Image (cartoon, rainbow over all chains, first blue to last red; front, side, top):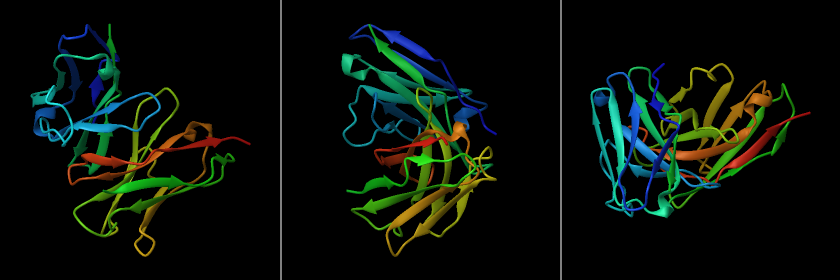
Length: 108
Length: 119
């Protein structure tokens, strides 16, 4: 089945830009979604279809997807952005949904 | 605005069947191009997709759980359910019900329910 690979952790100073990557075989041909999960809370969709934002999500959150890597970019990082971030795709060949292993974002 | 609420036993014995229900409010489970899904998360670990059901009743399950999972709809009660048979301690997790779009963009989540598998 399709596999998504994320780095376990990313650290960034406040005000800087965080890049969280999600690797997969030809992931650029898939629609990638990103979720933010705060401790003790359900995940929240922050980017869908590679680069679209649901209403209410700050413009600081953006996404891109090409080749074998999708990227969630968080600009002007704030302390409140510290959370786990997960990528997800629907593999249309198998009709299965897959999550990446998650990346813990630490704001220094 | 659609809200989801999980319910069911918090404790299940090994080898028995885990049964959870998700109640949908604020919208009809039968309307729109939406899937209704289950996702679980063992303590301290990542998200695992279990499976989903379309409004037509068409289902899709995770390959690793397919032999033990059944997801069903009850449109009269505006609910959907998860059954996971022959559970072991490895099935202990926080279980979420959720709503997915056509490409699995999951925009609505329940708060989750913790299920412990233990004798």
